[in-house]
Length: 183
Image 1 (cartoon, rainbow, N blue to C red):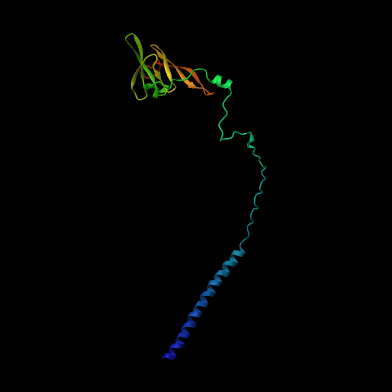
Image 2 (cartoon, rainbow, N blue to C red; image 1 turned 90 degrees about the horizontal axis):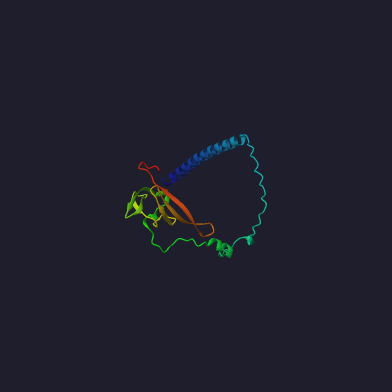
């Protein structure tokens, strides 16, 4: 039995080698036909790369520029004198309630006379009605009421100018009718 088992193994090994060589021949045949097909295809011309344009060099000269780590020079005395015209808001004064609104959001809705003084009735953006008299402040630009009439309120605002100083600017608030239109 031992002698007959050896030739059986040899026959089996030869059969496996035969199958494997047949598979290898088939795979190579497919590969060869694919390579022949690729070679037979028409060749496509590839466009050449675009020409690179040369850029002229730029010389950066920071000598004439301001050093960002140094403070900006103070303006000369003539500019400082022009900027300081004596007008400035009183920042130590306690802010009034209507100074928390932009002036264009406030609407004059009427007047009332109390103890001989004329008061303006002003509606804020949140719908609250406030009594305002001459000398009160309104708006975010330090607006001070200078005159109240039956048809409107006149103010003087203090706004910053381009030189770092302050300017006075006149503003007027006119009475609106019940329909919401200005009178």
